[in-house]
Image 1 (spheres, rainbow, N blue to C red):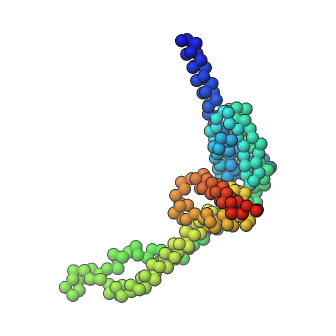
Image 2: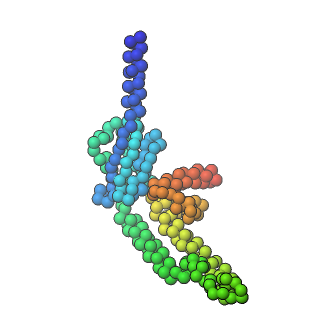
Image 3: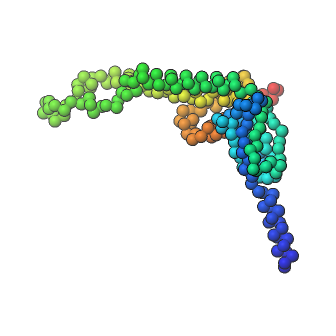
Length: 245
């Protein structure tokens, strides 16, 4: 009986060791080892993955029996056994890319979008605010035996109101399209997927998210995960439809 209990105990210990979880943290830099790289895929052989944040930092939990590797713009590092990585030290990585030019272009786009959006709201303030002060357009003086009379000029301007509301909706739609263009860029998609023209053009047309869907992502990681997973499905479909390429 004691021998059986000992065997069971040893089996439980071995199982625990095999499935122990390790948290690995670090920063990914470009080839210069000076500039952190955003949106690098940090992956385990088990399929678990994450992305580096805007400062190149990552944190991932993997089994001690797993291996970790890094992928960015089609460049993949060697695989490193988790059980050989010290949990007390930062596991930093340098990947063979030059990030300066692409980061500068993204920064310019971001600034331009914010400025354009604020200017657009200022230029069309009257249109965006149309319809929010309906009560103020009503007259309260007695007329024709009624306690409250309506502004007859406003009553006969229904057609003009409809045109204003239609223009307001068009401005909102254009603003939402610009927001999608600002977030769903070729620079980001290329970083995450490694796609090149003409594939990237087709992907961005077919998998362009709606404004509401884009706003539903609470973190950049969720948005990046959507792009990454969609690109895998896109490539599978494309290969099926183009077996000769």
